[in-house]
Image 1 (spheres, rainbow, N blue to C red):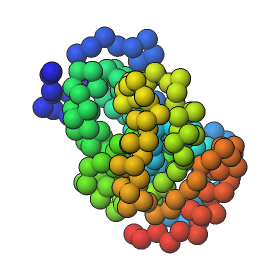
Image 2 (cartoon, rainbow, N blue to C red):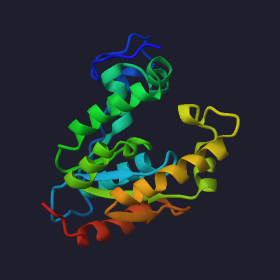
Image 3 (tube, rainbow, N blue to C red):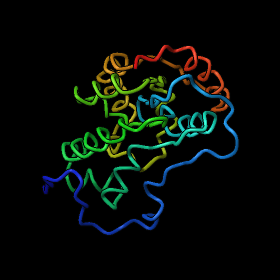
Length: 211
């Protein structure tokens, strides 16, 4: 299996049909609904299917901030989708690239960043997230995570005979790390995204940022 030493080097694979859209950042539309008393970045962590991208976009729009998806940043750097990175370099290679992108993205101010579900596995990643911004852990049950991901073919770690069991194992492993890094924990459940975003804003406004 090929492993690229340079974490920013492009992968040699055919571009996907929507490659020109990969890595695009969502900019807020219209007037923001609220603001925060600090410009620290907001980092969303949680399992695949927890709603980091969907809720992150809504939160960024409400706060008038730029939204950044870490997986899309990786895809823009590599020119291919995440499953292809896994196929060529394996999970270890993907995690190296992820750590490099995270190191850069966490230095940006006034953004909402959705991380990948396994970004918290590396101790250095957890340190950067905890020290450089406000971390929200979006929590959901295994059943809810499975419901949201069971038809998604863009999840390499769930390409198993028992994806629900895989989700359960991953959550058992990762949940203590999500709690370790989180400043705030939010149960996503079945609430509409707009309601979740609305409930998050006062929590973020009340949070005393440690500059």
